[in-house]
Length: 293
Image (cartoon, rainbow, N blue to C red; front, top):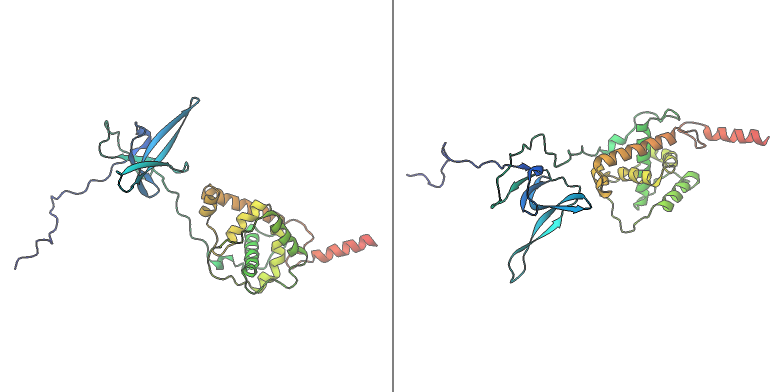
């Protein structure tokens, strides 16, 4: 019996698909000409425009979009690409005029995408296995963990669950925290936060809530905002925080580190709020008694 003629294997001399040749955008000598460009990990058809104003010139790229309307021929329209997109290489379409330049090498030269961020740390990485330190010996990592856990403790009550905050939390420091947040920040009633596992505060979180929130309320509104974004469960990535401000992930990471450095400085300052295991509050009362005497 003869075999199926459709199941043929390619011979050794069969032609193979030629790899695509890409060219550097600095070697593109034509404006207002459709070419294929790399954007992110995909390819789109776009054209370059050069705008000259008062002896200064700027370059923009416009993506081609197909417009189909009933009873009318297909046409194209062009939409400006965001300026933060870096167009570094292109390849021609059919009918490209003139000779082509020397091709470019993509490996090691073209960076059309920022490196992927490491995944957000799991919840158990916010555990602090040691005893809480006292000022001025509190490390930045300890302050970061305590503030993030306090904000999650605060959020667990705000989500409509059982109020797990310590009894009397509305007194003194906590009421100050509430006033600070309401005064400086707008709360959208229609906001839907990211979905994650429910946060369950521990007894240690309840006892440390007032202290950590006291540090947190001393920060500026911008510093509080980025720390709150990172305290969500799951936390906002630095890339998302940067995109919301039209910035990069590295910009958001540095901004967050500066906010943690600021709250660490607050935590290690001498204040009237009792530190963990300390008797600063009672010391303040004794001093006032001596003055009154």
